[in-house]
Amino acid sequence: MIHNFNPGPSALPGEVLQSIQAEIVNFQHIGYSLLEASHRSSVYQDVHNHTLKLLRNILAVPSDMEILLLPGGASLQFAMIPLNFTHDRGAAFIISGAWSKKAHAEAQKATSGIKALWDGSSSNFTSLPSHISEKQVYNYIHITSNETIHGVQWKEYPHTQSPLVVDMSSDIGTSPIQWSHIDCAYAGAQKNLGVAGVTVLIIRKDFLDMAKQDLPSYLSYRVHAEHNSLYNTPPVYAIWVMEKVLSWALENGGINTIQSKNREKSSLVYTTIDRYHDIYRLHPSVNVRSTISVVFTLPDQNLENHFLNLAQKEQFIGLRGHRSIGGIRISLYSHVLLSSVKALCQFMEHFAKTLA
Ligand code: PMP
Image 1 (cartoon, rainbow, N blue to C red):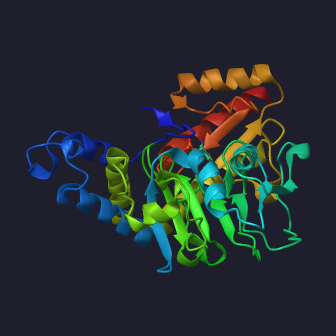
Image 2: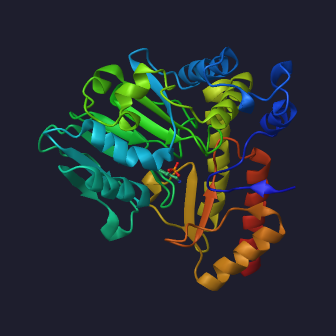
C-alpha cells in the first residue's frame, strides 16, 4: 500500500475517488456526465450551490462573508488581491516563508504601494513576528497561515487594525478558523479540499465593497460575487470533486473530527522527531512549527538521500523537501491517513535506531 505524503496535489479519501469513478460517465443516472453538462443547467447549478453551502457549513463561515469559487489557483490571487484592494493607503506583507515572499513579489508587480512589514528571510524563515507594528492603517495586511515550504504556521491570527488577508492554501479545512480577525482568506483546493483547478476565496462583505470598480471583469471580485461565481464557465470538475470531499468530511464528523485526527497525526510525528532530534533537525523554531507541513533536515545530504531511498522502498511517497530548501517534508493534510502516519513514525524510529 502506498503511503501518500505528497505536498499538493495530495491524498484524497478513497471513497471520494471511488464515487467519482462510479459517477463520471453517468451522473446520477441522467444518462450523461456532469462534465458534459452546461454550467447554466440545473444539473450543474445544484452541485455548485451545494458546494458553497457545504463550505459555509464545514468552515463555519459567518453570514457577513461571501464565498467565491475562482479559477486560476492561489497564485492568481497574489495579483488579484492587490489589484482589487490597494488604494491610497497601500498594502503590507508579513514575509514568513517562500509563499508569502512570492505573494509580496507578485503584488509589487501588480500595483504600487506594496510594503514588507516584517521579513524573516535573514534567518531562512524559522520564526514569526511576536506582534505586528502598524505604523498606519493599510488597505490590508497579508499573511500566509501555513508556509508549506518552510513549515512555519501561525497558531493564532494577529489582531490588526488594518484588514487582514490570509493565504490559507495549505491549512484551510484542517481545523476551525478564527474568522473574527479575518477580512479575506483564500486557498487552492488541491491540498485539503479537493483537486487543483478551483480556489476558494472567503471575504467579508464590507471589505468586498471596497474593491476597485474599474478592473477587467475576470479580475474583479465584485463581478465574480455578483454572478455567484458563475461569471464564466467555472472549473466544473474541481468543484464537483470538492463537493464530494466536503460531503465525505461532513459524514465523517466534520471539522472537529478532522482537527482531532490532524492533531493526533502531528503529535505522533513530533514525538518521533523530538525523541531523535540529533538526527531529525527541525527547520522552524518549536513555537511556530507547523502541524501540517513538518520540515526538517538530517545531519548531511547523503543521509537524507539514504532516508528518502529507503522510504520510497517502503512505499512512503512525497517526502522530499521542496527543491528550494532541500531536507524532508512530511505533509499531514486532512486526508493523509492516520495509519500512514503511524507507519512512517515506525520507519523513522527504526531508521534513527540503526544510526545510533
Ligand atoms: N500559497 C501557498 C501557501 C501554497 O502552498 C501554494 C501551493 N503550494 C500556493 C500559494 C500556490 O497555489 P497554486 O498552485 O494553487 O497557485
